[in-house]
Image (cartoon, rainbow, N blue to C red):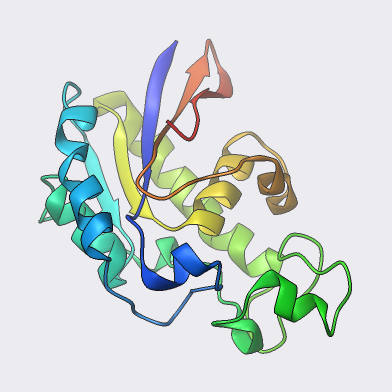
Length: 188
């Protein structure tokens, strides 16, 4: 089994702790988010990464920096799912207006569609596939987009990401068993 990509969700922010949907709001890490990110170098040691990418948002960039990768290449393809009118709101607040709402099953007015997110994730998957022969890829990004990316890696629709809980400052690994894309490790 070969490891193709290591996915790192950024450390905790004020809104991630309170359950508020955060996409384009560029929040910093909380002090405890920075502390946990400082522990990432030991967890990411070992492989020589052929490509290191990060979302342009400061919470992901700062996590990459504290993890020992200050020169990670910035890509908009790793931006968080754009929640539009739901930015800054909790799921409970949204469900007061739209019962049963989830980002996986309902639209985000003024935000991105699942097809938009799939297109971005597919571009990242292609970059992983192009680089993995030279070594694994390392990605720093956000909860929903990384869950969607994992689903696309596995050949699932973006909505498949709803089954992959992802906590802050965790490391997950995508890989292959022979030629089949697999989840090697998740939410570790």
